[in-house]
Length: 496
Image 1 (spheres, one colour):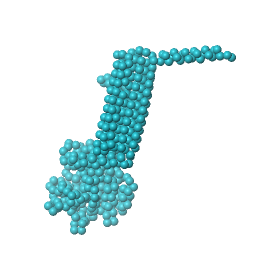
Image 2: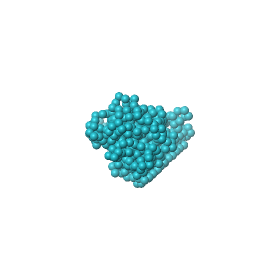
Image 3: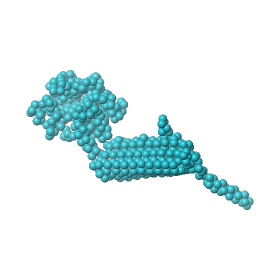
Image 4: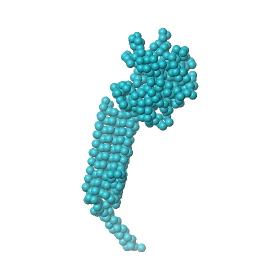
């Protein structure tokens, strides 16, 4: 929580604990989807995750989430964002309106008289600063705090939204839903944004009086402020000026519009704050969670997803997709490469048309080229695999060259097996390495070899199946023996 938000929450006359209640039980029929609305993704994360992250910035005592449709999936999305103990889940067994949803949490909140902030799980852009200002006004209203404060906005076209009815002095009187509004009330343009602060005991006392006397036959949370006002309680209105920030997402059209908003914000921040060059921002897609270093250049039609990190002075060429990738400094990723859940160290080159997945790792100065796939493998420092190769469950040492068409045959029909290729090895084109197998340091395989057993160091193997053709260190041993003989002879003839 930033200092301004923290100050806003502390500079109030009440000491009541702040709790947050997030409504996430609905299916969202206007989405025309079998997936619960709050699970639809925005900026790579479920809608509910955005709201949960904002809620935590307020440092509440507890976060309660009301679940219903696809409850297990919604709960998992919240846990992924907040951790296993980050929220308390309450189930709304029947979908009988927002009032019924909040009432479901009564037992969980029975022993508290907290200030309760009620949010919808489909309002992803609302900021902690706006919510802190709402809470501050709620707690400071008339010097003693309000029983309820609701956030409102004014729209040029308020069709479909509940209207705010004020009395002759401009104070809150009640909310009327679109389907229940008179012709005169429909002309009003101040609407309820669906974000509230309540004093918990006052809220649940009023909820007992809510009746399903409306066109939908539902229990409306929107009736509560009017009930409290009729009981003589203070109800405060927080009129906000940014309608987009506090708007919910109800259709796929709105989801796409919000996606563009988040994308533009992300790209602008990268260019201004991080010193990243985007050749064509209109055709660049970068996750808000991604981190990219200074002087990196991103070409058009690049997709950077999830928690990807990219270092400084990199080039990411067109058609590339990076998902939860870790890219070092001075790395070039050429066109149409895919890197998923994998790591590329400093000064490496990837692609074009390369695929790294399942925790593949390229060490410093290594390179993979055209149509090379690495799966769950490590390529050592300054090693290369430049053409048409599959490295699966493989460990490749330093300064090793993998020839075109090489395949590590890691699957025997039942289990996966590892291939180890040590330092300074030359793997000939079209070699098949039938795992489990090790190729020792300094060895060479002939073109088209099928290696089915371990290759000793400094050995040339070839054939199908591959056999030892030559020990590559024989000349080295002869030269060593000759040098030692000359040295010994010189010592014998050395004068005393």
